[in-house]
Image (cartoon, rainbow, N blue to C red; front, side):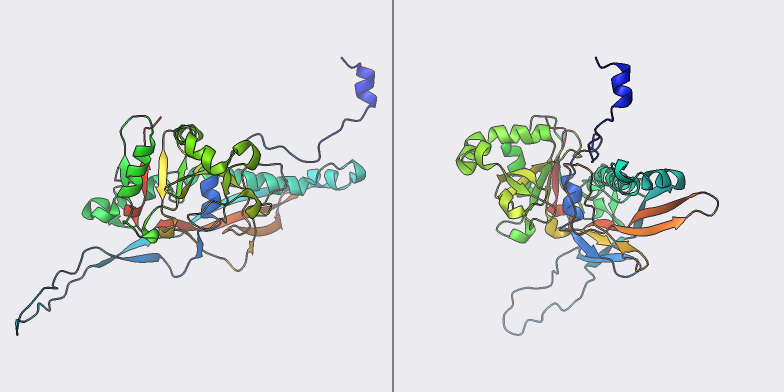
Length: 354
């Protein structure tokens, strides 16, 4: 035990970074804010959808007249802009003390507050995009990939009105198996059509480990030795439906993935307990509304972190402004837009699994 004299006259060594002890990884957010970002256009975003097949085509002989009746088989899903703000508050006194510290300054106070806000936003949004879109929240997977239990309507259309509005969900309380995952994959796919099949599976670490164990022999054969070569990876910018060797990420953060039906399956700390999702990312997007008075920024953080980075994102920043009646500055990270599922029938999930 050090004496009080020693601890008083000896300067402590402070690690010049902040170790994240709060947030966990969020693969789905990395995908949504990476590969799936598109630009918002118009007041509301409308997705035209065909709700029924044209039925007046028929065989005929001779001069038999054709049925030339017309029908209105097109509707639209409609989505409105939602918004999220993560304030950055810099008290003037604290900033001044940190700025004059010179060589004794371990970290920039402003940079740390920026990173703290980025990390809090990433953690909050990681939960939100698995959620049900309560209040002013963005829609999450639990409302976009649903059979009606969480949301009886989606995009302004009642789910019970059309079979294509319903996602395939297995709610039986049982252990997850490869057979269950494959059956759900088949149910949400169009046979032989790459565009109409899932591109990624997301699940919890517990269910991932169960599937990993079930595939043990295949994993050993495919990856040779995970202790030597490592698992293949998925990042926010990996092309849809692909998983790549870690070297191809070129230093970007990535997440371990195994392959089922040739598609990456990835564990996500934010995935709800007992759930597995098959997502067709060709039908998913985050429609991002840009404000030209704001600066677009990335989500890369200076804090030691494992939760991935976003080299391109819908996140914008309102520059720091001095408070009128306080000594300090306030800025904000801002996001405008909405998560959109254009084809609910092409998404599926398993729930209540162990």
